[in-house]
Length: 277
Length: 277
Image 1 (cartoon, rainbow over the protein chains, first blue to last red):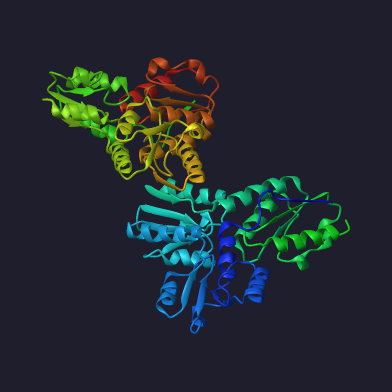
Image 2 (cartoon, rainbow over the protein chains, first blue to last red):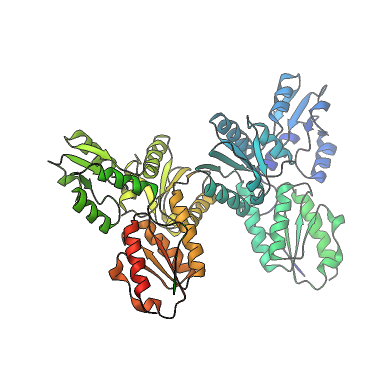
């Protein structure tokens, strides 16, 4: 069985930047997991003494607090800044963007729609900047039940969503409302990894998607791969691999989410290549 | 053969309004045809002495000038207003809207896209309000060749276009650019007539679409009907009817563009019902 990597995969700009910040800020604590990858977070704790706090309630007494790539709610950030903690902001600049848009559009009288998962920390953060609240929706079907008070709507997306689904939402809104101001805040790395995953899944007969199970962009990659190659599997570490997946297969595609470090990818590829098929 | 009218057809708000204005402003001249229906324009000339001028170069010496439903270019309107001519503006309010949007968005630094026919008087008028010019496109395919200088794009539509094609254009722009401000300026009457035409064409085995051959909304209705019923024909007057269209047919659907008066529709239905099938 041959193993082929996607032409674009793994660490994005925002994750690389956050890890560098964490490595340069030893003995700090992050508010929530810095990125959605437990193995990398363990490495940062062991090698750089960067701890992970559950939320800001645990931050009192902490000297240096690092804001995670996904950002945190506006109130939490303000509370931290006003306390004695030194705040180091590792929020991905592509996440800061929709936060700023939500705040500005709220002030200009737009009703806000966020395409994303209301329980995901990035979306919680972005939503907190919508002064009069926002409608967070996961799919176009949910829009029919939304009661809009205004005819001016601004739309942003969680950075890691599928473009095709974002367009379903914008098309629905454009059909039904007079002004729809669309900010495509899906990040380019997401685009590129998704496009490459699609091409890989078309030719492979089994695909392994490596990334955190709580990582939105990893889940999107997995969903895209399954469309083109039903035998696509999401794994967090080599322990999740099941040899039966590879029986009789000719080409195994490998891709990884934006928060998956190369060292994990290498370890897993090594394990796959040892499997007898 | 049964004859069935669409549930929504013919005169829209803007056309009704313009005809009332013309009837109440006898002995006036319109700059270009008031609406895209020659028969109705002849009626206004014969019964109300409302003449049709080719353009503003013929307006000197005229006492009262009526601005057509489609509007006229900004410069022409300013020239008229500054002359001694009394100007009566019958521009459809739904056309004034995209004119205002183009002007405002140009001033706010947006690059303007107009979905429509660059040669249609409505589009010429709307385009003239885009201070730094606009990209007028007829289909999404033309967008690939457009070189945008800015990443902030505002989009409007000719009032009479198909929504599905407008969405192809907005989806392309949203995929490629960071901010796309979409103003759905397709008018509701257009929506309603198009929806009704679609339903009619699904059940009829021949459809007659009545309207001016230079009328954009009539051409869109014809295009929609042909999708669902290949034997769909556009006629301006009863002279265009061809008895062979109706041979062996069971149900003839009839619809009409927004500038088609009821008296023409009645005349044509009368003629169709006389045809031996």
